[in-house]
Image (tube, rainbow, N blue to C red; front, side, top):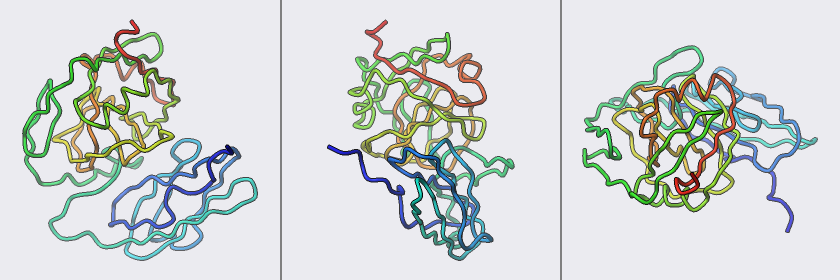
Length: 248
């Protein structure tokens, strides 16, 4: 069977001012050139790994983004709307852009737990004891636990994984999976160093700093003792291995 058809992850994006979203060109083997064909005042784009860009909505209006690879062009139309008054909810990854602009935190109360998954209603989801893993970066190993949910179970079934993860915002490493995973997204009380989460349905994110956020993620699990994780991951792209604890 031939490889998957080359195309953008979305041909239409609807965003609110200050919102950020990832746009990826799938199944492309050649060099990719990104540019804004129209609406440069309304959006900006920033490379995010080899095959993706982060789109930032700046001003109400429309824009068109083009990705060019192997002599073919792929376009995405972007519609930017004004933020609704009193709504802090956004979709994105990380707490700020490269310029340090803080994303607005959603005004909601969520309890946090040091050992369980955070949920919007303050309840703690139990960890599934048998889904214990090891996260390896460089010469360091970090025992971790996956939560008892469908997305984490899907990741468990794919282990072991060796991923070339990309850097974003000085607080996370991410990797786009080949297949979509189950989604049960919510806004966490905060992001903690060592949290493993899913952005959208296919972007695996490993956070190495603590911060507050208003963005929606599906919680997958977390490193039990993340001390030294930031140093092990470094400041750029890095190869990270995820494997079951019984592989030790």
